[in-house]
Each structure stands twice: as structure tokens, then as C-alpha cells.
Length: 421
Image (cartoon, rainbow, N blue to C red; front, side, top):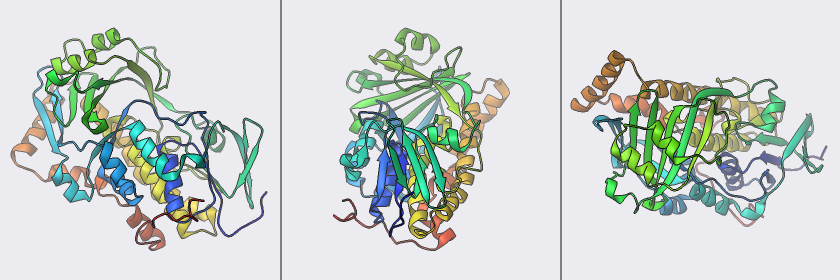
């Protein structure tokens, strides 16, 4: 394997949100030898929305893309959960200035493609190698060798598997750990906001809770589009693909009898897509030697806390800071990253599952008690609403790493010509 040099060479399999966040963070920290290997031939994201909690927005601001993000994002005023049929408000949680002040960053909705473009523009499209699918890897005390499907071998000091829920890197690292099918299917669509203007949709996370299913909609693309996702029982569908087209009539049937806003938004959408939802039980091991996992490759989760992308973003900065803090011992840096992230992401994974059960509640008494709890909190202006999410939104990657390793740096330095060459 390769001869040692002054900095570790980092290989990242996957140029999604988590992989690009990692690559950008490493570059901002002065790492010169970062190689991103993306399996697709064209670098693009799918046409879906993503919610970013302040915990993730803080990271993106730290990495210098605040202006690009602000230009395309929508900052919702609240999360408003409503009854599936009557539209009656069950829960109202503030996401506007009060949330931004408490957690140090706003809550954002963005189109995934807009976020992806902001990351890739900051990192440099020319720095991503396309059509480079990882086939296998080998490691020893000196480094890692990655064999691509083209037959080429790429060598480095560290391999980061950021290649999604069906990760090739994870498949070799943790054999036999297949994703768990949740029994749920996600329908998604994107409507032009002007076309849906007659529905009077608020600038919120609008969540509609019903028996065995729920529906969420919010604005993206600086308010020009409305993204929606509907979670239903999957039936026989098992395909986990963001690009599988569906039949709008089938979606309308799934939400028969639901509030007119839900059905009207579906009707205002031209193309609908569906994919089966997979997750994994939390797993304590992501790292072996010089190889580690990140994002959905490490901790895929159901979307009921809207934290899948945010956790990948946190992973990226924590990993980069660990490598910066232990630059001459990559294996120790990866192990430290694993120790910092497994407990937190496990809590988010399990919390996401529990949120889904709450949304889809069918037992009349339990549903009544759920709704009563939220209404009482609203009437008494209870601070419990904040305490329930403080652990999630107040997380600070730098503080977590500093507590483990000592302060790495006060802030991510701006890139220089040398650091991005």
C-alpha cells in the first residue's frame, strides 16, 4: 500500500449529502488529500424536499454555505399537526424566531437538489469522481485499498462508507446486517405553489395524523414549490427507490376521505413517486480499523423525526473534526467518531420509530390522551415542548468533539487555494 505522507488521504464512497458534508468539512480544516468516489455517472439529487433542524443548519453555516442556503430555503413558522379529517389542530410547535434564538440557527426546508448543489458548489464539482462504484476493499496497518467496478484500485489511509442504506462498504464491513423493512410505503410529490394557492397552505410543517398513516407538506425552493410525503402501509411493495413512479389515483385512494387540503395538494401534483421504507436497529459498531460508515450506511431511520439528513450532516463534521484532532492516528480518530455518534443516532432512530407509532395511533383512548397532552401544553404555555426536543436541536458537533479530544479549532477556517487544490 501507499507510502506515508504528511496528511492522511481520505477516500469517501458516496457524494450524497453526508459524503459531501464530510468532504467539505475536511477541506475547510485543511485536508488536501480527499477523494470522493460517486457511483452515478451524473451528479444530481432527486426532486424531494428535506427538513433541516437547527442542529444541522449550524453545521452548514459553519461550513460557509449560509448565503447559498438562505437563498433557496424556507424557514417555517411552526410545526402544525392536525387531525386527518377535520383539520383540527392537535399540536403547534414554534419553528420561527423563537426556535432560532433558542438553538442558534433557524429551522429550514429545502429542496434536496438545492442543498446538494450548495454543497457541491462549495466543495467543487471537479473534485468528485463520477461513475466510480466501490466493489470491495482491503486494509492493513499501512492503509486501505479500494477496488472499483472498473478494475481500478484506489489507495488511501481511511475509507468512509457514505453510500446509502444498501451500502457496499457496510455489506463488507458488517456482513449479514441487512436493512429492516418497516412495512411502510412513502408516497411523495412536488406541486407548484401557484397551482396550489387556492388551498391556502400555511408556511409551516403541516402534518396530518390519521389511523395507520400520515401526510406532511411544506414549502421548498424559496417558496415556489410545495413538497409532500404520505406514509401508508406498504402492502406488497418492497422497492427502495426514490425514482419509482406511481399512480396519482392510487395515492388519492390511500387518502380517501382526508381533509380537502391533503387531497387538493395531491391533485395539484403532476408526478408522484413511491418507495418502501427501510431502517436498521441501532448498531454499536460502524468502524473496523481504517474503515467507517456514515449517514444511512450507518444508521438509516424512518423519517418521523425529520432527522435523517440532519444526522448525516452532523456525522460529516464530527468525523472531520476527529480526523483533524488525531491526524496521525486515523484508526483512533475513526473509533472516537464512532463513540461520539452511535449513542446519539441510536436515540434518533428509536425516537423516529416511536413518533411514527404516535402519528398513526388508532386506539381511541390513547389518541384522546395524546391530543389532550398537546392541547394542555399549548393552553398552559408549557416549557415541556422545548425540553422534549432540546436534546435533539441543541446538539453542537464542536462541543461534542472538544469534550472528547479538546478543542480542535474555534471555527472552520475559510478555504485557501492550497486547501482546495
